[in-house]
Image 1: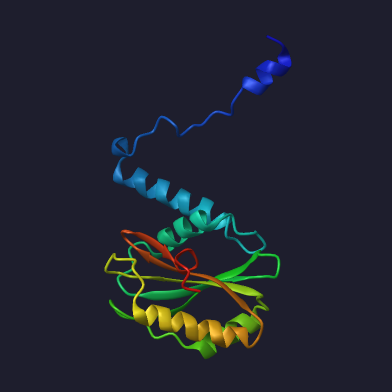
Image 2 (image 1 turned 180 degrees about the vertical axis):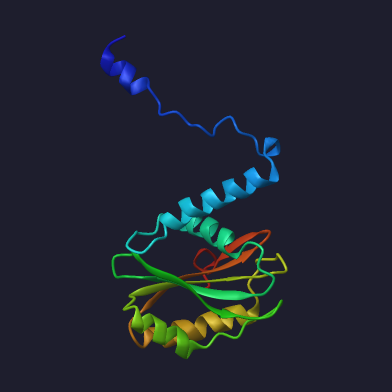
Length: 171
């Protein structure tokens, strides 16, 4: 075998491939989750383009993990799809959250964002969007369209998964 073929066949070592979650202590599980969140957060750090809808959904699941109350956040993007910031703008109760379009527009203008992705959690675990979620998304979309800002998606995160408004054709 030539050196070139050996180099092609050589795969980088995956130090984690043999680890099984049921062999970890609670402390090790916490460390692994923290590391995973850091990896996902680095892909959603300011200046980075979004890596894809699935990774964004995974990142948001980690962000909202364990929240007992509903929280509404926004990923602000520049005109090239790079992350400017992710901010949790509103916090509510176990089954609702008051979101004020004026505040969303103010933060969007302050960050000079060209596009946004909304996200909120459902502490109940069920990620199905409610009629109120759909109405809110439309109100925010209308408000942001007045200043030429695109709404790319609204993700609802629950313990049972994540629902994308864009994938469902709700935008």
